[in-house]
Length: 518
Ligand code: DQQ
Image (cartoon, rainbow, N blue to C red; front, side):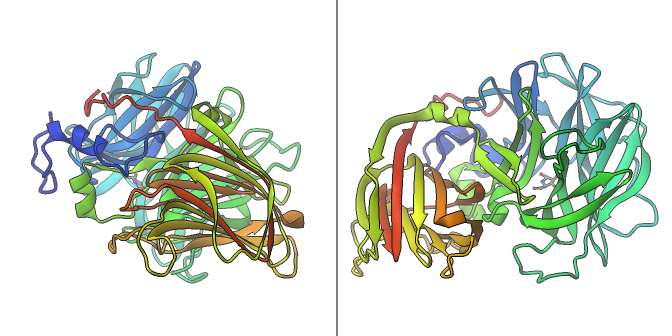
């Protein structure tokens, strides 16, 4: 067991799991670490029929320190089995942490490429796995790249995207060029050990846009992920116009801002951008996403749903960080991406309730749906008139409050533009979501295509974890209700027709018997 040497390690390790499990705000059907700290998804993959999810893990407590690679496996992307820690810092180039990276199949040998942290900086390292992917041996030649490109003044340098192209491996390392913007440095290798620097694949422009904006590209790109969305593989000529996508998490001076993606074309040694998009309107609540193609050919993405409560509260709770549900990634006709929870998640649905379709016309008072729960999957088909607003309240507590409004409520709003044109807005209002004045309740919102005013709305609630998909556009966030409210209500301005509303309670995926060191 690790020594309790870190000043934040105030909860004894043998108490951490019980402490974490006792927290009513801890999700029950999202993957969470056994206790302690979790951040980025790493090495996400499908290997001989088994899904592997590695993650940034600190079993010492709920704070980011001396990061290891936690590991869990699944055969269905729904239930997960904890596996032994895959990578742990050791003397040498990863002595201060095994930071983010990926898994590749090197001619049958599972191989991790990750960022070893030493003396406050990260460099690329490699480890090879046993055939069952449960034990890992670090390469004696680590770090496999000795330093960032010479002569370039960088802001940071870490995280990896590695793929096979023809007879060679290619690798991107996330970085930023001081005074210019975020970037991904491209390398090439025949053996994953000796890498030749090719050049920056593409350089962002941090002087463009408002640094406070939700689409500012930042001064460094963390967790770059390059893939072809649709038919064909990276580097091949696209047969059907499928875009190439460069996902990155915009970072600035220690601040984890938000995930973005460029669509465009990767060819030769460069990426020609077509358009920049926000990946998830929850911003930092779906950070550091990583994707993979599973054995059925789907692209599946996980993201880190970081916390919106104080560091001290996390430490006290004994756990921090939620892995998003795995979501499929597809290209839409307009060239941008659409996301949906993988259908396997429906296995957890229980106690189906279908409400009759109804027309809501300018309802001032919220309509009681009779639905309630902290672990819910809600699916609505909606028809909004031009200018109409639909308001779905969840995790509401009826009692208290003199204004007639619930004492606590998290509100999801969909508004169709007044001119009835194709677009509308998805908004998450968390201002009444918690009586705790210390939690993050910043508004989250963004545009959603609403052809003919039709919206398919999916809302997945798992206590403090909320994932919303409106016509395939995601908004992911965290909420911290203090009253344990479970009410679901509906209200409208203008004319909003609910064509169907289906609701399920979601079963949990863990049995409460987890170990910090599986
Ligand atoms: N988290 C990792 C880094 C990465 C960052 C460290 C993103 O490798 O850049 O835990 O959240």
